[in-house]
Image 1 (cartoon, rainbow, N blue to C red):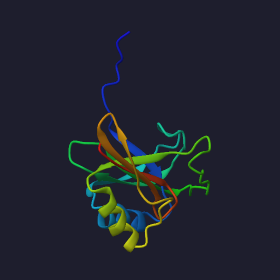
Image 2 (image 1 turned 135 degrees about the vertical axis):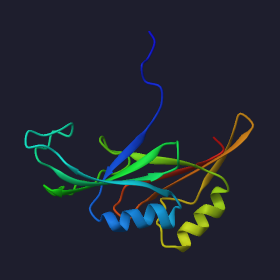
Image 3 (image 1 turned 60 degrees about the horizontal axis):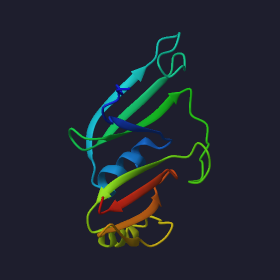
Image 4 (image 1 turned 45 degrees about the vertical axis):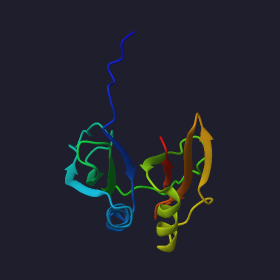
Length: 147
């Protein structure tokens, strides 16, 4: 059976403080601000299933590559509900990086909290490194070197 899915477009995160999250992803992690959209759903709702929802959407990432969509629900406001990284419903965004140890040190110096120090192992003759952190609103971020 041939699949009709042929790639990734974006990962969406519902956020509370849009300005803080845009700053984090663009200034702290160095992603590019791709575009901003003011979105208003019709009274009967749209693809989100939230009738009349007013949202601000900010896409950050890399040109012609996977992007993160930061979604701020203005009306109705979102309810708090963070999931831990091992619970059903949790998610994370994984970034391919070079020089993981140096990146970890730089981000940690800026106050970004990590679960552990980077962990490295040899996999089929390649050095693979991985570490988890959280963004300012608690969303899980994975940084991986060597894949």
